[in-house]
Image (cartoon, rainbow, N blue to C red):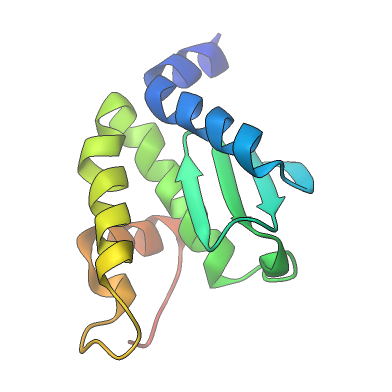
Length: 126
């Protein structure tokens, strides 16, 4: 019952995650800590939508900060429920679209990314 309630609590992002999976057709899907970790070659980076964490297939061997960071976003989704897309998802996508290498700020300095790092247990030097 708890899993059903959590799925409903995160319903908008779970539906978006299912749509992304249908579009990207991941090469691998694994159950990790109640989440679906999905590897897709058509994915540019990573995205967490409810219980679906979708990352680029070449990140398969990276168990460190990259995956921990995305799992941090998944925790944000669990905490914020229906508010996640407005508080985290949309601002994070806009930040990712605006930010590029060479900026004077770390990508992970933005509040959505810094909080995901914290929740995921990521320690960065930057």
